[in-house]
Image (cartoon, rainbow, N blue to C red; front, side, top):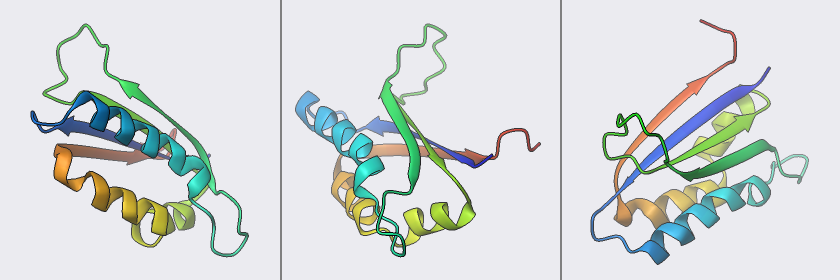
Length: 110
């Protein structure tokens, strides 16, 4: 069933709208930029994201969320630890991110 990887961003107050838009575009582009070292093809099954619009008021400062789906643990491990595109993305956004939350799960496993 794969692995679901959820990422929430809280941007620093000094972050501009243009920086946020660029970051979101770059995050979504990881779906095509992340290339498997063996197959030489994109390995991220899907990536979606956007600005929070929940009326519940439980955001706690997190304004943007992303959902990434991987086929298996091996792909997620490569993405997190070795993929040059993802590693560079995390370095690039570090200066404008105040807080990040990540939750991963396998659907139906409790």
